[in-house]
Image: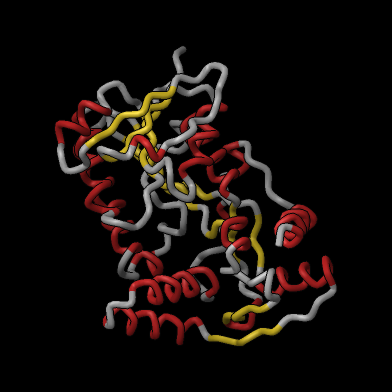
Length: 307
């Protein structure tokens, strides 16, 4: 049985390179889609003994360009960022339907199954529109399917940048007491989840898939940090209810960066926002292990030693 042909959209972003590496390691034939003139940004493709990689420059505003690029593709994987996310993904979905693509994995990788999160504006609104559009297309086209992969926070990427807690400066804004559990997933595990979803087409058909490496709290991260280097922390308490209100005000003022950070804090650490996936994990079905606290500690130790 031949392996499915994968199209990867967003190969040069935060998550894309890890997904590309995992797809190649799994020996899937891969077509990397990039905007016209963007091929030079893909400077070095990962090596794979049995992988076939093609780079195609496409015009995302041209339906015909996208259909031609996806003509032999079985699965489209999106790892795009926030810019024009819904419009670009809608164009890709329309082209996928015409090109007879079997599975579409949108750029979610957060907590898009939670209605409280989906009602946020900006990036979340685009993700919500994409999910609704996918459901409509699946209802209209029996061959076309989707999988929405929920991974919550990017563990290694956020810790390296001081978003959950600042390991370098030993400071943190502690939201709602700091004991709210939040699912976290490394970029490599997210990439492995993409591969696993492709390998389990029936089990992951037309549904939300939930994966994580661990569920952690901010206070737990600080405790582990103190265990590693013994240093004290400077913390500032904050209510995510207040953070959400400030985020909406920032939207009105046109400060989308501040608004986005506020909505992220609310969706990660706000009680009732569903970021702890422990009770609904698909890790076992997908063959993905879960981290123990010592694994989280080792990851944090490596990040802290790199400063």
